[in-house]
Amino acid sequence: MFALFFERHRRVLMVRVTGVLSSEDIETHDRVVLRFLAGKSDVRAIYDLSGVEALAVPTSKIAQRGQRPAIVTGRRVVVASDQGSGEFARIIAEEQREANLPEPAIVATLAEAYALLGLGADPAFEPVVAD
Image 1 (cartoon, rainbow, N blue to C red):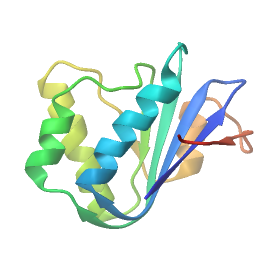
Image 2 (cartoon, rainbow, N blue to C red; image 1 turned 90 degrees about the vertical axis):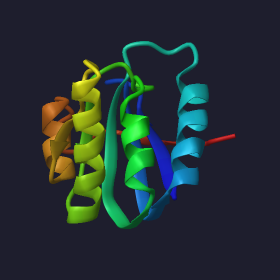
Image 3 (cartoon, one colour; image 1 turned 45 degrees about the vertical axis):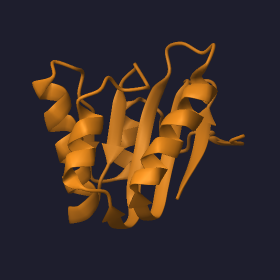
Image 4 (tube, helix red, strand yellow; image 1 turned 45 degrees about the horizontal axis):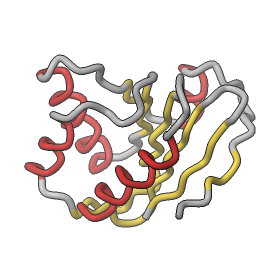
């Protein structure tokens, strides 16, 4: 399951994933984020995978997704605090690097992600209502 938040002043989208991350979640994410980004530019993103308890996505599907351009074209930071989410992030980054696409930065904590994007300690993220 995932939820979206947006820091309007610094133009940062945060995708927070919790529980089991499935192939269907990835497809839903792509659709919802594309719709949200319509008409917006210069958006950066944080993918907070620290709440992922298990992956239900085949490695081949992760690799396939990593070979496609990212939906968010600005800087992306992935928070991957455990082995499962770290493996997911590593495969995506590796596939994007091999495809000559910009790869995301991978960090262990949300605080590190905030620092990389210059957000300070308490950014004003607001929930995004997905249609």
